[in-house]
Amino acid sequence: MPNTLYSFRRCPYAIRARLALTVSSQSVFLREILLKNKPAEMLALSSKGTVPVLQLSDGTVVDESLDIMVWALARRDPDGWLQGNLTEMLNLIDENDVEFKDWLDKYKYADRFPEHSAHYYREHAEDFLMQLENRLSNSPYLFGQQISLADMAILPFIRQFAGVDKDWFEQSAYPFLKVWLADFINSPLFTSVMKKYPIWLESEQQTSFPEMP
Ligand SMILES: N[C@@H](CCC(=O)N[C@@H](CS)C(=O)NCC(=O)O)C(=O)O
Picture (tube, rainbow, N blue to C red):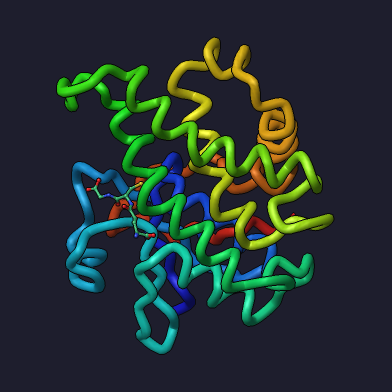
C-alpha cells in the first residue's frame, strides 16, 4: 500500500501538507474527506479526527500538518524550504497556528462568538499581519530571498483571512503582504494543490497525488 493522505481541499493545514508533498514529489493516494462525515479508516489511524493525516506504507501515521511538511522536505527539498533559521521559522509558524488561527476563526465565525464584534477579532488578528508585513517590507519572503517552510505553512491561513472580507482586505494597508499572497495564489504550485477531487468512498479507485505531468 503506498502512502495515503487524508485531506480536505479547503483546510489550510491540509493545503500546507499538500504543498510540501508536491514540491518534494512524494506521491500519495489522496483521500478527500468531508469533515462532517469522517471515514472510520481515518479515525482508526488518528482518533483526534483532524486533517491532514498521512499514513506511510510502513504503517507510521503522521497526523500533524507541520510534521507532514517536514517529513516530505527531509526526503527531498529541491527549493530549499528548510534552509535558514528553522527555530525562528517554527516560532513564527507556532504563532500562526496558536494565536493568529484563534483570532482568524473568531473573525470568520464572529456570529458564533457574540461577546465581541468581527471588527474586534479582526483587529487582534492584525497584530500578526503587521508582523508579517514588517518582514515582507525587508525581503520578498518571510525569511529572506527565497520561499521557506514558514511562507508555505502560513500562506494558506492568510489566504483564508483575506477571504473573510475581500473588500476590506483589498483596501487594507498591507501592500507587501498583498503581493506575497497574490503571488502565492497565482502560482502553479498553489493551483495544483487546489485541484478538486471527488470525496473518497471506500469502494473507489485510488487517486494519485500529486498528478504527474
Ligand atoms: N494541529 C493540526 C490541526 C488540523 C486541523 O485542525 N484541521 C481541521 C480542518 S482545517 C480539522 O480537521 N478539524 C476537525 C473538524 O472540523 O472536525 C494540524 O496541524 O494538522
